[in-house]
Structure formats: structure tokens, C-alpha cells
Amino acid sequence: MINLVASEWLKLRSLRATYYTLASTLSALALTGFAAYSISHYFDTHGPGGDPVGTGLSLSADIPPVLFGMLGVFAISGEYATGMIRLTLTTIRSRWTLLLAKAAVVAAVAAAAGQVLAFATYFTAQAVVAGRPIGASFAEPAALAEVLTTGAGSAVAAVLGLGLATVLRSTPGALIALVVLPLSPTVLERFLPAPWNDWISSLTIPSLARQLAAVPDAGAFGPSTAAVILAGYVVVALLLATLAINHRDA
Amino acid sequence: MIEVTELTKLYGSTRAVSGLTFRVKPGQVTGFLGHNGAGKSTTMRMILGLHTPTSGQALINGVRKQDLRDPMREVGAMLDATEVQGGRSAFAHLQALAYAGGIGRRRVVEVLEEVGLTGAARKRIAGFSQGMRQRLGIAAALLGDPGVLILDEPVNGLDPDGIRWLRTLLRSLAAEGRTVLLSSHLMTEMSLTADRLIIIGQGRLIEDASTADLLARFQSGVLVRSPHAARLSSALEAAGATIRPAQDANAGEEPVPGLPAGAGVDARPVRDAGAGEELLVTGLTAAAIGDIALANGCAVHELMSRRTSLEEAFMEITQ
Image 1: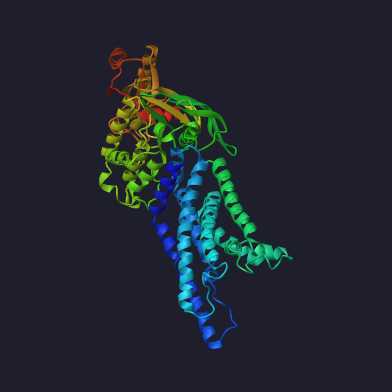
Image 2: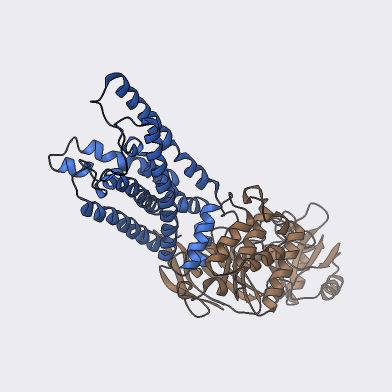
């Protein structure tokens, strides 16, 4: 297993797509910076009463799950697209350990990079807010926790991406699913009766990360339920991916 | 040792491989021959545990590939050298594979040297020629120094030097006691490399014989050109010869340079553009045929011992 992790780690860092994907997560900083700037401007001209910036994470919260999900997708979709998966599978004992190694690597990278990005996003927002009473300090309850759980959410997204790509065996397919799945709750909640509409809109990764951090009004679930759901995503993704890779001819 | 027993693979209702049974023994190079779509790659994928057989089994060193404890050190494979991610350097590609088997950096350097890619090790595979990818694929197969090698069409894309290099390499690997199975649809190339030939067609076993035996079987034959072909044929047949047709001898499919063409099963002499008719006679020596012709007063314009080209023998076998 250690050998496979070393192998997958080298595979991940020897492809340019990894760096492009990680670099594009910086777009979250730009988005948060821009949004924080316009909120600050509103505060300066209209006074208090508008939306606060808070930690600034929710302003660009949809970006990290998609991009870190892509990291997970690329970890296996390239092997399927080129056929290299066959070579890889001839060198290993069992297919599920390969998935587990890939999951461990992308989750670790996404957790680390996601954490850095979350802190950078937070500090960017606070720098733009520049002391106006619309930001959030780590002294406030849930502020630091929100930053930390956002990083954790990125790791979950990476494993989901890996699972999607393994089941779909197609780069475009997995990328489309990665973008469409987080959007579907927004669409579905309009058609569902209460409390289902609340529940379904609380199921996205950014929302779960905030609920996990016990951010007030973040969603329908408490921290422990949110943790269970996030863990459930990981388990289900890996389970389906294992079934798919085990039972299909490569 | 590779043992394939009653191996069958259905894709929907298509029988890709049908009740295939053969053994690939260590210490020799075994050629796996068949036309495109004959089931070679499917069989190799089943041996390597990539495809699940519909029935039957394929064993490497007595167990299924999935049950090998240390797969890279027991079996090395090259299925399709183009199936690599081009974004990596050759070194990173091999190193990533090596890590998976707990194989160190030194071995990566070694195999790169062995296949002659040391100079290109740090270059991205995307810029590699087909021949270089082929060499890289062979390097990957050799990483674990395995006792069993399975190579699908390894000659594809190699230049003549590369082909000679590969032939020497494979023969020396087999001489070290390894099991070497390589597929091809080129019988001539295979006859130069392989000690044994397993020939399949439409997923079924057609031949499993030593290359020498197969060659011997298709070597015989004397080409006779005579303006008195009809008279000569009956005289020859009376002497116990079999007149095989020299049909399509000159318009043969892909004649191989250096090897005469011509083989078939019915006994129709074919009119040649030039003088006389051409007969392919088996069962008599050229000398005996000349004597019979003289005794019967038949002029002979051409009399030549010939050996059937392997490509044609192959076509004939797989027909």
C-alpha cells in the first residue's frame, strides 16, 4: 500500500494538469477579493445593513469543490483515456488498493492545498475589508472552524471526483457531473416541499463544511450529521468506484 | 509457465475466444499468431487478469494473475505501447510503475539503458516516436525482472535495427529460462524469433507446433514450368507425385522478398504469362521430375525446388 501511494504521488506530481488545476484554485481568491471589495464599497457608501463579508469563504465557496474534484478526476481519467490503466493494473495485486492509494493521494493534496487556499481566502477577505466591522476575526465562534472545515471539504470533493471518473471512465463525463451535481440541489429545492427543500440544499459540500463548523444558519444539519454525510460521500464514492473497477474488463 | 485451459470469452453474442487451450513453456520464445481480430489481445488480457474469462482459466506460474503475490516480479507485459500518458517523462513513467512494485531507482536506470532510452529519459513521452514508445513499453515490462513476459505486437513501429535488437533480447531472455510469449500477425518475423508457434483464428486454436516442424511441413515442393503440362502432370501423378497448384504464385498476396511464393490445395495448373504452364509438385525431387519429363518427352522450361513462404503457409492454415 505504501508502494502504491508512492507510485500515485509521483504520477500526480509528474503531470502538468495537476499544477494547472491547483493554480486555477487561486481564482477563488480573486472572486472573494472582488466580492469583499464591492461589499466594502457598499458599506462605505450606504453604511451598515448590507451583507457582511464574514470569513469571506462563502463568497467563493463553490469554486474549491469543483477544482479539487477535478484533481480527483484527473488522477484516474487520464489513465482510462490513454489506456494506461491496463498497464497499471498488470503491475498491481488488487484493484481496490489502487483506488485507495489514489484516493489517499488526492485527498491529502486537496486537504493541504484546500487548507492553504481557505486561509488565503480568509486573509484576502480580511485585507480587503480592512478593519470595517463586516469581516470576521478568529476570535469569533466558528470563524476558524469554517476555515478548517473548508479544507476538509476540498478533500471530500477530490475523492468524489476520483469516484465519478472511475465509474464514468470518461474525463468530460466526470467533469460535467462534477459541475452539475452541486448545482442540482439549487434546482431541486424549488420543487420539493419543506423540510426536504432545506435538507437537499444543505447537502452540497460547501454547505456541509459550514454546518460542520457550526456556522449559524448554515443549513439544516448540525456538525455531527454534517460529518456523517461528508464521510458517507467518501464511502459511497469509493464503494461504487471499487465495484466498477472490479467488475469491468479493463 | 503460462497455462491456458478451455479459455472462452464472449462479448455479448460474439465469441472472441473459444475453448482455447495451450501452454507456454519457459526457456523458449513462443509466438502467438493470428490475423487481426483473431483473439490474440483478448487472450493476453485474460492471461493478465484484465478481462474476466466467460469460462475456462488462464494461469501464470500456476495461479491466476490476480493471485500472484508480487505481480511485477513474476510477469511483465506490454499490451499497447501507445497506451501511456504523454505528459510524463519516460523516467517518471517508469519510476511510478516501479514504485508500485517496490522497485528502486537503480532498476529504472538499468532498463532505460537496456532499451536504449537513457538519452531520452527526461523527455516527455508525448514527443516520442512509435519506436521509442515501443522501447519504453518493453522497458516497463522488464522493470520487475520477471520470469514471464507477455508482449502484444512488440515489433510494431520498430525499425530494422530495433527489430534485430528485440529479437536478440527476447532470445537471450528465453535462454535465461524465462517464459516469453509474443504476439504478431507477421509469420515471417515470428519464424525468425520464436521457437514455438501458437496459431489462432476466430478465437480457436489452429496450430501449436514448433517453428521447425511448421517450416518443414511447408517447405516441400518443386516448381515445374512446361509447355506440356497436362501430359507431364499425369506422368508425375502416375509416379506418385501430388500436383499442387501454383495458383496465385506470381500474384501472391504480399510475397516476402527472398522467399518464393506459391501454395494451395487444389491441383489446378495456372497459365503463366510466359512459356508453358506452372505446376507445383510435391512428393518427388527435382531430379526425379526431370527424369520423368525426359522419359515422357516433355520439354521443361523451368525446374526449381522451392519452399513455401511462411506468410502463405500462415494464410493457408488460418483460412
